[in-house]
Image 1: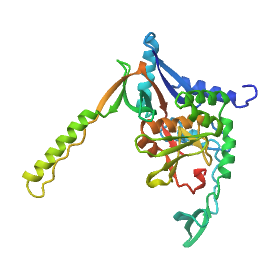
Image 2: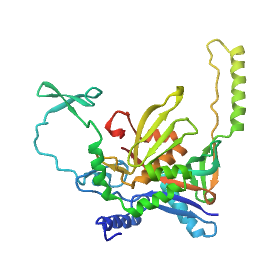
Image 3: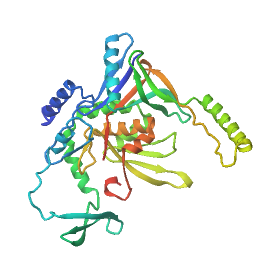
Image 4: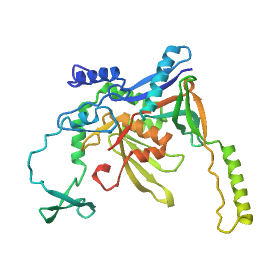
Length: 134
Length: 230
């Protein structure tokens, strides 16, 4: 299986980069281009291959790209960790209200975001250059 | 087909230069009389944006004019501008009442695109949509998709801003017309530097992948403004 990156392009409509594991040279070149695009502020939108309840494809924006492993790094939100942290936050909030000094605010921890790697060879992506509002 | 398109030589030349300069999204094509508005951090943005603009007159009737305020009048359907010149305050209307000028400018800007580029973009879009939505796009130039995050319904349109519709409280309400083009666009038109379907793909992919970024990057036009294209 080979993953593709469609780069929206003025002169070509769109150009394709291919991450084909059987062609390491192409993978290395594609990885360099993807890394450079992220550096230049392109939005790289990855089709995760999953679908929601309404059968719509789920996309995520790549925050970074790992050139050594050919993986997109996306910000993911693990539902199990989120549920655990929500429960802890509620406990702490209750404890602070009963034991804490008057006027002291209960500390509420922000849910931790998780970075998730997606192999580039298994998904397709769209690269959008920096934009001007019309 | 290239023999029939007088701009194909310039388009191909710019594509080759873009390849040499590692401009992954290409170089916008300057057109005479329709200046480009380019994303400021793009290489040579100022140079490209200056092509096609008339030279500023040395002395004009607008010398020493200070703009005091500018706002939209729903009664006149245009912008009202209030200014001060030589100590005297005056006002006038400006802007467009309807989108006819935008439509004509868009028609003029269509020289920048080629059939080949649009065909490639349509091919890519076809892989992102359901059969029904793609058929709607091919036949009407627009399709609907609901955001799984916000529940906002988006009407994606070719060569027009995307319409964001809220269905809360049982009735539909237009939140805004969202206008955005990768790299840049042709001033006073709905035409982007990229071919029309590439703009639609950019809107759709950003909505699916990072809806907040779509709203941040777009100009948000009120539905009654001519820029909204409604």
